[in-house]
Length: 147
Image (cartoon, rainbow, N blue to C red; front, side, top):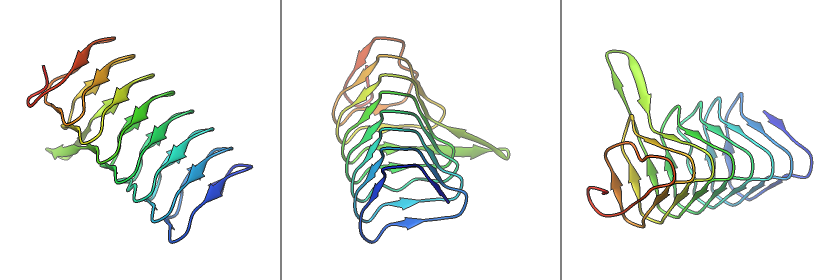
């Protein structure tokens, strides 16, 4: 485990091997960071967040409480992930196909991003949305399925 300067890690967190945490990061209570997860600088990780392992979380990312990430998920710089969000992946023929969140994305609470979906730069996903297709840059989607 590698931890940058001025980090605050809450109580009852589980941090596995090969996790890298940047500087000025706040990690709240009951967080599980699986093997290979990398967190950039100036991030906030809310209570009960669970990484899937080998996730890449950029700089200045806010992840609210009870969000779950699957293995290999990428979250771009400056993104906001609301509470109770599911970031999913699947394995197909031995190939992992995680979802990807680009830079400056806003995802509202309770949203689900399905495997192999990309939410492009400056997009917004409404609360409770189920995103089944890529979201183009700067667009807003909502609903189930998200449109």
